[in-house]
Image (cartoon, rainbow, N blue to C red; front, side, top):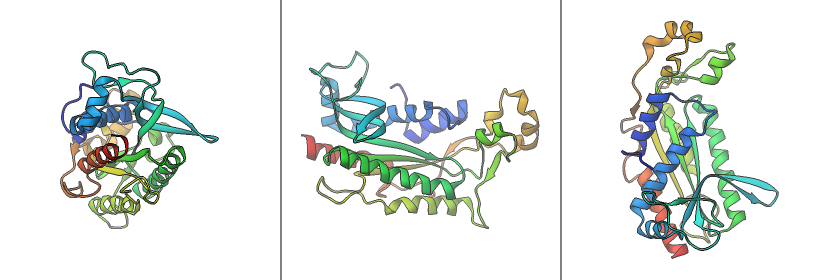
Length: 271
């Protein structure tokens, strides 16, 4: 957990260095470690229990819920067996929890916002449904990265060779800024629970916005020289999006609000 800077800065630095590909877990793993870092830095009870080994964590954890395999990007909870402090220099011991107290789903929308946002909304609703089936006290949270770049190079379309690799995000005359705002607003329909007895929903949802066109994916790939020649001049450096379309502090979907809501819920339910 050596990442420094805000989660948006970490995301931007990673995709600027390595580009983005949907068929790898490295992006979500990096984000997961930053979220754990920020939770422990902001929530004394979580930090204290992680340091003593009473709280452990697992990335990409599989949990059986009924007949279903519930996949959790970040699962935090009590250990199996006696508490064991993390190794020197580590913030938390990374091992499967015996009882999941906090479950966090990570998703992103890098391109094709109109279709992707509907899929991600379904993902989040299914996620908190699994959490309620598992244990009504379990804290279910979600984290979403949205790309506000004007265009995006899709590695999957590029590899298919029969599809246009570039998607431009302005739709039907709408500027990209408006498309991103509408995407964020769709997720405001998810109910944020105020207690374990509250109606179904998530305990917390955090949204961050970056700008990345992914054209750096072409670097060092001579097989795509024709695509580089055609689109290379459109490349812009990856950056954290300005506010707006990024959210202001105080917005219920701001990342800092997500961290605080998780801490509040944990303190109330598991102290």
